[in-house]
Structure formats: C-alpha cells, structure tokens
Image (tube, rainbow, N blue to C red; front, side):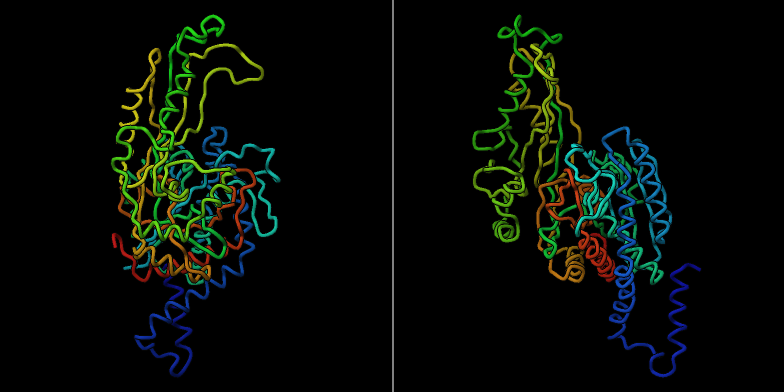
Length: 499
C-alpha cells in the first residue's frame, strides 16, 4: 500500500470516529472547496514552519561548484547530481536516478499516482557560470552566506534557488498529505549554461520520458518582490564562431606590415560591416521573416516593462543604440539582435609583440524573434560572409548552438493557472513580460515536444546572475514555495496537454 492510500484511509477513519453530521458526505457544491482548502493548508503551514531547514538545504546545494564550462569541475557536477537524486528520493519522489550522458549528468524523479490528473514537468539546471573575477566577491562564491534578506553564492539565483522552490513545495505536500494534487516529473540538468546539448539529445531520443501536460521553468526574473511576472516569450538564438586566416604563420610587422592583408584587421572590417550606421543588421534577407509587433502588445509592454533609463542604468551605459523606432525594451524582446562576445588573435600578454597574427577569430550570436528560423539565419550569415570577405584572406564559420524563439498565448490555461498561483503565493497579480534571453530547453519542450511551458520567475533583476556577488532574495524563496503549492493545485484542477 503506498503512502497516499495510507493517508486517505487514516483521514477517513478519523472523520468516521466523530458522531453526527460531521461524518456525513459533503454536499456536491461544497465538496470541491473542502478538497481544495483542507489539504493545501497543511503544506503551506509546513513550508512556513520549516523555512530555516529549506534555506540550509539550499545552501548545501550551492556549495557544489558546478561550473559546467570548466572540465576541472566535472566531478563536482557528478557529486551534485547524486546529492540531488538522494534529495528527491528523500522528499518522497520515486524513480530518482542519475543518468550519465556524453556531458554532465541528468537527474530525474517522478510521482505519478494522481489518477486522471494532468502531469507537471518541473525543469531546472544545477550547473552555474564561472565565478570569475573572484576578487570581486565579498564572500567566496561557493561558500553561501546570508546577509540581510539575501542568500549570496554562485547559483543562488541562477538557477538553484529558483528550482529548489518547486522541490520544497513537493516536499511540503508529500510530508503532510502523502500525495500530490497532480502528477509530477522532475528533470534537472547540468549543461544549461553551455547549451543543454545532452538534455536536448535525451529529449529527442526519449520524448516519452518528458511527456507532460504542462512544464514549469523558473529561470527568469520578476520586476520587484511585490510584482511577480510571467514571461510568455523568449527570443531564440544562434551562436557562431568566425575564423579568418591569411598567412602561413605569424610574421614580423616591420617586414610585412602594409604589404599583406592582416587577418585581425580583416576580421574587424567584417564585423563592422554587419551593422548599418543606425544599428540595423545588414545581412541580406535577415529581417524577411521578422514578425511585425502587434500595436496592442506594444502598448501593454510600455506599461509593464522597464523604461529606457532603467535598462541603461542596469547596463551601466550612457546612451542607447540599435534599431530606430523602438524602445530599448522592445529592442531586446520584440526585435532581433547580433552581439559580438569575444575576439581573439595575436599576442595578449604584457608589453607588445610586433607580429601580424596568422589567425583571428570572433564569437558572436544572434537573438531571434518569431518567425525567424536559426537554420535560415545561419545560411544567410554564411552567404553574407562569402559576399563580403576581403581579398587575401579566407573565412570559416562554425555553428556552436541554436534554439528557436518561443511565444505562448497569454490566455493559455497553464498561464492562467500560474496567474492564480502567483496571486495567492505573492499576494499580487503578475504582469506578463517578454524576455530577450534564450532557454534552449524551453524551445525543445514547446516546439519539439508540444508541451505548454510556464516561465514562472522567482529571481530579481538585480540578483547579479552570472556576475560577482550573485544572490537570491529569501522572501522570494518562501513566496515561490507557496506559489508552487498553489500552482500544483490549479493544474490538478484541469490543465490538459495541448489545451
């Protein structure tokens, strides 16, 4: 007999022991209210009473230096995955296991005993960005510390603290009622910060393992602690590396300077030619599929999104740049962009070495909007390079990763369930926002597997994700657990796959 059966029988016997009307069946019009309110009060109270333990457990999770981009931390990711599997097993989930991949491990668990109820897939990533520069941290990045109402540490906000809220909601529910109001699957990966290659491959090979009616991903931000937000759109991405070669090897600039085309100079000319003076991208056909923004949506976003001044302040910039005719928030959400992330070539040490490097390279990425397709933009970029390559050098383009953009209708039942959950968990109705970022797994869930995905942010915009002194606002952890508890109840009330 499973735990949920024992709990139900125990409650039934307790009710039966009381004489009189209390033991009679409830009228139909009161039944749903009783079922909804009585079980949820227990997990809510449990979560509040055990907030200190939950925080300590999160700190233990943050102590794992799970930097997926650095090979020296591979063993740390394996250790963290095992810790998570044990933790999932400990809170009452079943089939908790660590799955090895060609990269870093996947962690899976489920609870599938809510007959006739929908299934929620909870996604999170336990890998983190490198902590450099270390000298800018007030406390060591993998020694979590509480200062005021914030928990500091690498991964506190992105994404350990956010997905941990959902695990603690499950913990509170199973420990107090022995069951969940809906079926649940949990998938935690260790490669989100480097493109999610293993998870995307797993999803293609085993779509049934991730099959669900709705997925919930908490890896986005909210404007303020009293202003939760549902992100209903993400830009897609295309990451590339451009390499320019022109010489057999590095040569002396005094001997050959002014006589040969320099690969580093040619690379800079190519990159500069990708932009028009006004900020538009010059690649032929690039804007051909860009969906024109809806006027009503633009008006709504003006009211709920950050102002130009707020965006500039967040970036530490003195003035904006980009496509004319759009606010900076629109430029980062409704419009595509191209960014250069790094240029390499030649001597980088102290002093100077007067050589002309034989090779130069740049890493860059596009952010794409509906209805742009990464494969088509990849082809257009390669054609542009072929047309504009300076004489005397040759170019190689390598595709690193890609993800399609995601848009979800704001009236979708899953988003409405999340809206109700936010209102009860945070005490405020959420706003609906677009994000300029990309979460590759969301594109796979929504576009490839057909799973409606809710982006339920719990982090704050100033949590310093990816930067020194990353932090997580602890009241958001508590409110996030409450919100997740209510979300499970709302989904259990009737959100169906492809609804």
